Length: 397
Image 1 (cartoon, helix red, strand yellow):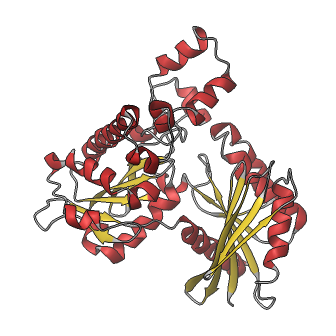
Image 2: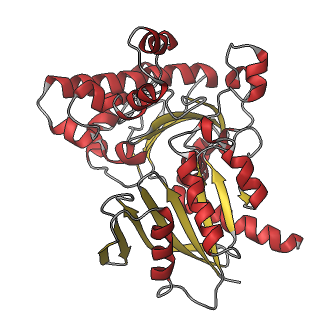
């Protein structure tokens, strides 16, 4: 039976959504949009074909009001003859949730216990699930985890050098952006089947940024670890930082835990270094010295992490750029590749300059490492998982 799949990515002040129709083995996107400004001047925006829709919501609308509005608005587009399924992006699955799962009250309670592991993401992801369960208790909901694709890393890759009891409590490296990396791994089988079974670095570069080492289409290691703060410099996040700095800020500067969290998650990264913006487009267009300093640091950390992950892979056959910056920022791709010439990377600068937001190879035939731009599609990955989970549940019923 054909199905309708609503994909939700719920944040602290916004809810992004996509609607797909699942027909046999194919998913077709019908519309996309978001509700932004929750808690303030909330606004509903949607794109249906070439038609853009924008509508204000009552002031101070929360997640419940926003989702109720969305489901009521969708009634005009939903086919009553086709069941509706909902798939959610959930940042953290912890040790236990390594596959997409049909949500129940018990599973939701278990996921809520993981809130401390992703305090700025997990509670808001789960808020949408709770609200829909309250408003539409019979609506099937599936959770898809950003950590799941990285499950199964070797122990020395997952482990921190802390007392064993802390490791057993769940303090370990998880990795994130897994839905994006899973999509890229699957897409590579079509774009370059040889590369899909080789050693590849995927650079998911957006406001959040990370690298993933793939071998034979499986995650081997990632630049992100216990939290989404780890690894690369990001839009407003610090990336990797000496733990001694955190102790200094707590003990000598007197920062509270809440202030430290605000500093590391929202005031650092490109924004903190540049003092101007977390938007790479603005920084690339700026003539300010601090903007260039932020870009230089950003590129340096990517190149350094590439070297570390190459040592884990014991070689490199390909590099994939994805995410908002990876897909669109021509100068960033060029500067990263220029730092990786020692790996045999030879960028086709003309091809690179012509690629924005589309799939293309941007290395020359002489390059020992194939370099591609491949747009990611986490929402499609969630929709696919949602249909698969529901179909399996129906078979088992």
